[in-house]
Length: 381
Image (cartoon, rainbow, N blue to C red; front, side, top):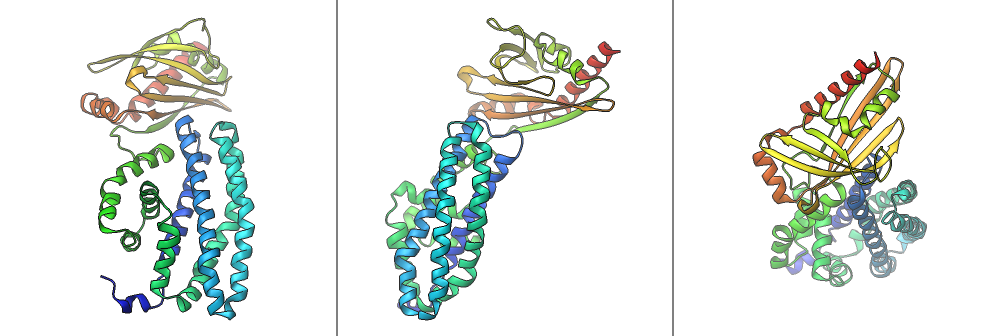
């Protein structure tokens, strides 16, 4: 229970640093996701774009709340802080155009993957003006605030202008955003701002919703509800030119000659060769399992890159398979990556329990590339 003496002590402004750390963390996560190949697929792309838009709304309100309801109090009580407060105001005005730029880029990226580079450029612009400001506010401004604002006044500002305007779901989302990856002390500082019952709901019930959304946008093992690997990569050397590898790789009717799992494939509809939009059906076997998947080519860049996406139909599982061919003085480096795009939790559980080979596919997939390279080398000799 908080005593009146506690409320009269200098404000504990740690929450400002926690808020800043959360924004830094997810801006960094967004940059990492947008910079790492293979780039976000459709569902993840949309989730990242929407999260960036949410962060920009959060940041705008964060500045507005301080400018209108916190810093005027400091200016009235400490005339010596005028220059620093003017700097805070100038920082906020300089950050607004960067916010607007990222909002525009993220809105386009939500509907088009072509805007990825624009989002990265907008992140560069934002971080150039935002990150120094956040550090200055923590190191220089917060000690001044703590010297002239009481804990009771700080809590009133936080509750009246940052908590009360939020609906229950917004409050849960924002609270979990702030405690994501935070230290126990920082988590306690945020949790104490929430009444007991909503706090329990946030930390024990709504956390599941938050983690599901976090996995959708970051697609990392940290948030994954799945047992099977989210992806993997392998590469081998082939003593033949990329054109020779390409000829075998793009003939889907020959996949059974080198794949350990896909026993055969056939073109669908009018498709007879690899091109964007062309479709084929692969027939697979592993252990007691037999299944077929329709695949669609999404990238065909002869003889450098080939990508197809599988469609699980009513089962809801989808994956992406990507091959990159890099010419070397003696032949070709064949690189293969795969990533799970969607997989229902129930199907993940079934696969993990009944298909042990899918718990770690690295050795088997490396063997596929070895057989592919050997096949091409034999035919090129």
